Image 1 (tube, helix red, strand yellow):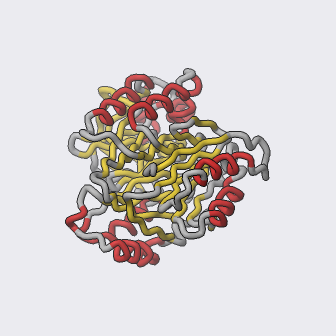
Image 2 (tube, rainbow, N blue to C red; image 1 turned 135 degrees about the vertical axis):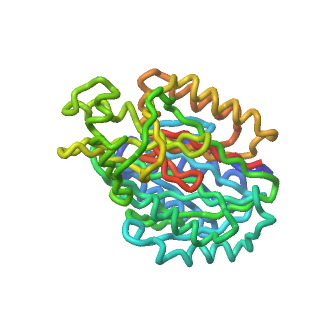
Image 3 (tube, helix red, strand yellow; image 1 turned 60 degrees about the horizontal axis):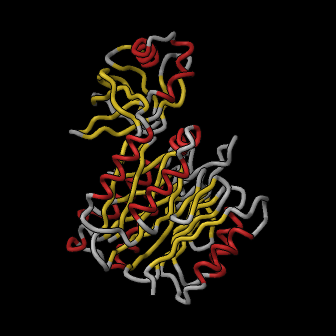
Length: 378
């Protein structure tokens, strides 16, 4: 019996069509075994339909998914498709929902504590357990959700990785689901214990640092607004570094995100807009008196090659994997005709996988932007 199966279809070209689900369901069903876990991603338009069908067809399986800009697996990928990986053996899992994600998900941390207790996770599980989560976009929810997971795990230090869901193009609407139920203001999650070995969580930046390092000197972290860098108005300061006028900075700010420096690591925060008062609104938290660096795009081939090299150095061949990428990166890959090659290379290096792209990434206890994440299960 295969431990897992990946499936993909993009046959549904209109809202309400079930062709893609039928293809994916048949691929999973033909194994003759009941999955323990299904992880899926699809375009927004048919996400609710697919979620309900998964819940109906697999009532005894934990099924977790998110709306995605690009859905992919080792069988293919598309911006208007359905991708899934079904795991039949070698894992234990327990899922749940953190409601009120944009207000106070911490009030619902008992959901995460219950899942941890159900699996009996302890310190001996280090390196063999993780939490996969999907969170809706545009509610400044991610850091609040991560705080809830941190509180729930206590001193167990369970790694959390995940994605902010992809939105319907031209809107701010995004969706996540667990076991057939769809949410637009809740984080869905599943704790996974690998019974067959290790779980490796990899991260790779798609942007590289410039020589422009500075301090964050005035920030409203919860509102994700930076007022000053190095004691100067944030927008004016970044415009000067880029050699552009402040009033045209909005044009270039997406190409030059801020790198948060923690030790030897750089974590990416995207600028959203420059406000009239010169402050810069961002898509993730920055903190007062922390070091930062201005970033610029790296070569897509170079950054993806670094990720593949990290996969090759794992010391084991993944039996299945989850690949998370920023939608903006996939747009760049698409412009360069690189998307199909990128998906193919992951499949060659990592075998059976499901991939999704959204509006942000969660790893190392932080909410990130423009970052490639990869979870490999031995």
